[in-house]
Length: 488
Image (tube, rainbow, N blue to C red; front, top):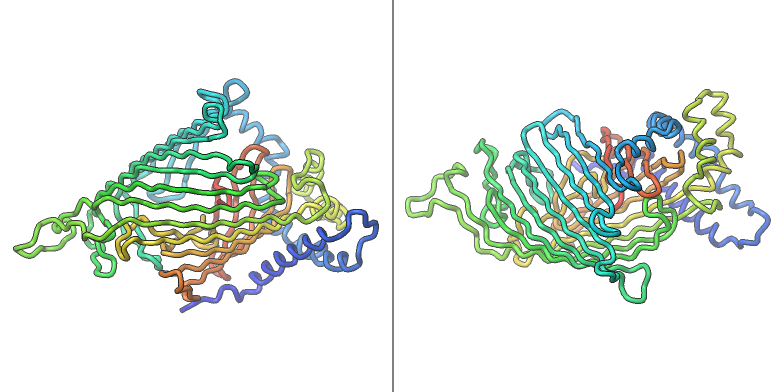
């Protein structure tokens, strides 16, 4: 049964708000700068937003924003950053990471970040995690700007992931199966600004990826299917892959962590060379081979190479006349009083429309992202199971806690942002996604929508975290608490 989540009233309110904001921003851009009178139409258009919608949104995020704002007022975030920072000019950061959600994903870890560790303008990151079920992962990243005094930048990355609870998902479905996997990956990248341009960069990358997959201990969990063949998709087998990628990035955003104006365009292309699968014993699959058959199920003989293409377009509409979106320290202190000294009388005084107009309504942002990804198999049916594109909360589709895999993906995300504090933004989002087995087979049978609200916390030179609640239609809630930004 197809659920038409987009028919919910709240979703349409969000869409109308985003469209209104974009039109309103365009109208403001078209207003002459020397105009001394405010057009009556502008006042009439902004009245519902200033007197009805924005106060409602402020109350919506109040339970989440209050403790974060209290922490900022008392300098807890700045003091925490200072506590984990060491060395000259605080170039070293050492801090823990954790996930206390019950289950095998319960994790504790440590992170080490060091700027200018070997040379000027280089960056080293070491990350390690240990999980409750004995799994472990480790990542080492090193980046260097201005290689040998040139405009080139480069990087190296090493990843190891020992995951006995790893799973693969059947394309265009949510059906997933257990497949313990130990993977290792070495990656290199080299890039440079395109000559005579200040906003375009080109980057070339390559990797060596080694997957050491095995079958689960319970044979009833093993997938044996003629539609998703083990010998063609590389299930429960070892394989080596060599991705080679080329990307072009255009970026003229005014601020990397709290953008309010500009666009970002990303064009990615990756060709992955896939080696021959190692094969798996019939006995391990719970299958009895014929007497004249080999005891090992070998590679099916198809060409397993594949291509991934990706297009991302982001644009930020700034609404308001303030020079900067980010609040100053003084404005942040004034705005913070609503959350730290809350009373109804104080709320009426601090959040009267005139006060709100001077602080928030001169600083609003509509953020829009369109993303399209495609998987192209060199020989149909031969791409390995890990080649498929994933649709999940990071795509983003924040209202769902599960995931799909697919050949083709399109997403459209819209966000309405406003400053709560100097380091905190309120967020209202609405997202749409389509997946398809072929580029010309888009269907509403695989159409999804999610919406929600929350906050994002960032510093001038660092994205810290976000706390957001996602819904699909009027069903359930998905809590997002992560250090990863909303958009790629």
